Length: 152
Length: 333
Image 1: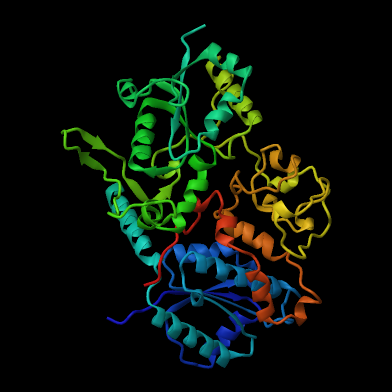
Image 2: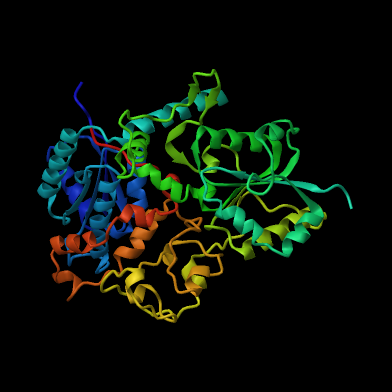
């Protein structure tokens, strides 16, 4: 069986999400292995959320926002890129390949860029294979399911 | 007065600093012993595990367990004391969040054993002997050793814990407050507080910090505490020193800050935060100063700036790695 990665994409409301929307309307082909979560700004994405995504077994996380200088809130994405830069170092120490955390700047009009960025990211994660945190999560999940079954 | 209550002090993977912190109650100890007997405290009394096993369930009124759970002995004694105690307190940063021993989660059990029994310069071990959990000597004596776990855990990962007290170690003021809670309960003056973290503030240390607070803080260059002359009035961050006050729970009476040392995070995160390290990370990245305006700096330079921060994992999670979201370091296959 080929590996189907699970990818979480945080998109800012004003640029990347609109770009993704346009990519859909424009019928660009994108592999279906990602789930988009819309946030008001890429800076709203707490590093904690990214950790939580990996803990729950995500194979990759992408944060997408407005181009530097174009932030709807003037400077939010500057904070994002600082955080992501250090978070990559931190995740590296946790033993994850730093490629698993992506950062992209996509404007509302860049539907094609959204499509190629996502396809490239999905390809990269597929090559990397399942996240090492996946196994431990699967164990907890099965334990949780067993518990639920016992409760019923 | 009715019968005295029984107190136990359990030990896990600990430096025993928490024992000393209890003894630091000094004259207040007399008040404690008016109402309580110390039934189990391996550091100060001569007692064996079998004596605890002989007790009735729930015989101990309150147990302070300090230290992380790192081997089968820690786990056994934690479960045993839980059964024998009415109130279980995870006492100190190690029991509460894993603490310093929790940093062992950056490596694996085998690597730790290799370092200790082979790799250190002073070790001579040509047969690569490792401790065994069970050994029978030629004379027929049976010896048992606890098994080291792969992953260090906090106390509430192993047993049900009633109260959590952070700090490394809990301060004298916290102990006096804890004593007050116990006394009020014994004398029937007040009910016990609800389960969870007690004796701590709901706010961050920064809010309680006695130092001058600048409107905006920037770190020009990350400096080391041991090579820098520190101004006792100014904010540490302003002086380029990493201080975890912005992301750490208050309630420790700013002990370290008052003796001119930055906060290292032993009180753990506030209730609003799931992951202490991620919270520290957010705080730090925004205050590292760049030359010129942010908009003109290319991404590579930001990456270089952040790479200046050495060992983010060990620094941000100094006391809380086992209680972080990712809990331990893994390996990509």
